[in-house]
Length: 181
Length: 129
Image 1: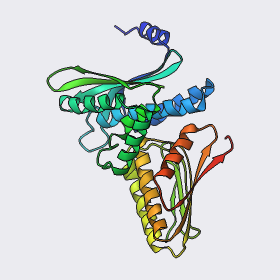
Image 2: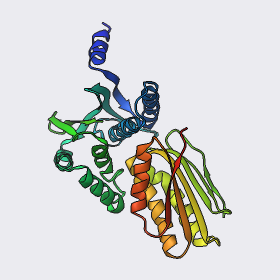
Image 3: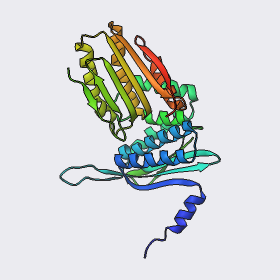
Image 4: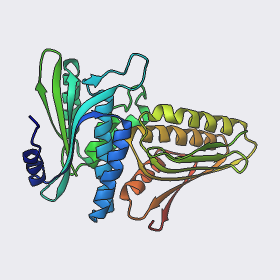
């Protein structure tokens, strides 16, 4: 029996979702969708500054899925790229844009992630800027982003980042993050 | 020394470093999957050039519409190498070009400028696309 996607489509569009992605992501997906998103916002006459911030947050969130999602589809034995699974939604709410993403994470990362985000929520714009510059200068580049991505998102946001972590089983939890712009 | 020329891709900028004229240009968007890996050869070329070149004058033109956070770290490393060369006596000028309506571009340039001490850092506004 085929899935009737119309109710889902209706529900999403009624909620002013302009873009929804769920599945396996990779860098070419980030680039393709990113360009389309830019095009759409420009066609709709969105303020250039807002377009830039939404695009920036979109890229950080998508690349977080690609780099950190604990749900992965391994490459074939002879090598190649593995795929990471997650969800990303861009919508509008009360005149702002909101970009939300979600993916599985390993339970051992829950505490670090919630402490880091909790700290960022409490900082104002100047404190975020100071932290960003300090991390950019001194952070080790071993981690793919030195945590800079989260700080950057908090700086681009019009209100504190919102997140939740839902336990799934003894190994994994589901992490979701929303940025308003 | 050979020039460094990298064509732009969807997620990486055009890079043209001309060893003869001492003019280095970076133009476009930067959000490759692994910026540290992407910029490693660029930083290596730049450091070699700064060590080996006879010229005392280096001009860097940067016109970056968008860069993700880990590219921003890689850019700081490039600028830091240029700043170190300026400390040692080279005349280094960085022209950070941004479109008037691109407030992120301006903010980003201002923040790089604040982190550099010895080179000359110019914010250059360019007309609308």
